[in-house]
Length: 623
Image 1 (cartoon, rainbow, N blue to C red):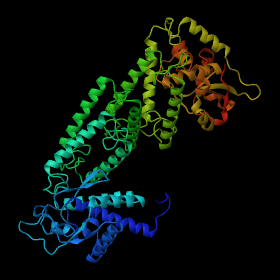
Image 2: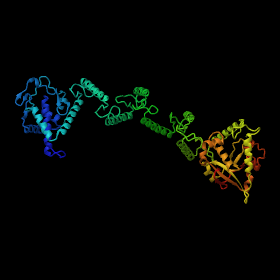
Image 3: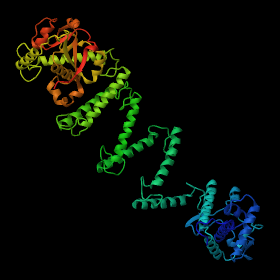
């Protein structure tokens, strides 16, 4: 016996091939077939000349004799060597199936290729003679088959024999398909290379096989465990790749992706009929799974939105990717209509804002983070993660709008030169400030504490008015000793500090309703910080309440606000004016040019003009 791992010699390979030829010939003989020259050329070997076939026949006879059996050529009418077979058996060749004894599968044997090409179908016509032809006969063919198989096994050629028999069976089936014949009985084919009887029998056996495997949780094509869609992983990937390739070709041709359908594409690569069928099946499947609390894409328990954890994450990433692509194309992420460079069109932007506000209100009412529903720090509306994300998002938006020169507020129009907002947003901010101030003035409560009633003819309550006057008196300014300059303070947002130190302070219109235009300066750092907090709340569109600022942003005051000192040189003191924006609130009745009286009674002044950067210096926030 051959040693495992040793390559066969050329003599062993030749001996193996001869045994294979002999085994195939003996099996054909046992099946009642005539083994003649044509059979050797087309069914045992693929040979192109009679000379090669003669050589193969000679080798088969010699191999049989070497195994101790007699073999030779006889006329077709002889049943055994030198013996005539009965007339009733002379025309039965080509009608039986050859049983592949050691392969456990059936391979049909029929007419030769020459018979098929001539249209004879492999069966002699009635009265046709077969004289002049010969066949090969073997003595004791069954014993010869066993001896040849044993010899082949000894040489280690059974795997080669199995491969060769499969190849022969495949060639025969291809030949029958070519001529439109059933590959099992040679009758006219009905479907899939089978006649109607064999096709129905094959379909029944296949259905039973798959039903049995489905019940056992096995692949419908093999005996491996199911991976997806009733198939093991290998068969699933192979089938998916094959179907995807076929569907890609049909998409390129503008056809429905369902194989065999010739309809035009209606939606999603499907014709209208198949699209409606697919949509109905999906709805039924998802409705059934929803009732059972299962994922609408698989059989796992639902996690969120009717999807399991895996499909929920896939859906989220898919939706995120699709929406980013739409926004990059300038389309609304919901309806795909032009959005003017924004994420939503006008209609869906309003709907999105309403949904966000509703979710925020529900979360805040439950004491949770308004955005994600997490647990925020005490006294805060957002958790630390959402606050960081919001700050980073605002910085990205501001940087993007600064780069393109758009208004920081709306992001639609070009900003006014030297400003960060467009003219429309500047006017809107002023108008909102006026409306809010008028609302506070119309209220019977103090505009500062909004708790106690106002003094008649004033906008402050008695306590806040007295406190304000005491602070102003304590902060009465005097010229700095030595050079005669006067120092004031101004509060701003931390993100604007770099520009202030670089370019100075630009004049702006006050938001008290008096219509004055200039740079407003405080007599003390504490007063400057107070107005910086008020301006910050106004910019946010929130209630003008310093206490509310301390409640919401108290721990971030160093991060959000900054104070600068402004030193007015003696030659520029003449540009100082009274802060008429607060005159009505505190009952100031002095002259608009009397800045000293404004400083004493109100605590603030206004500088008429731009303050250059060399007068400005950052100072620490008051404790």
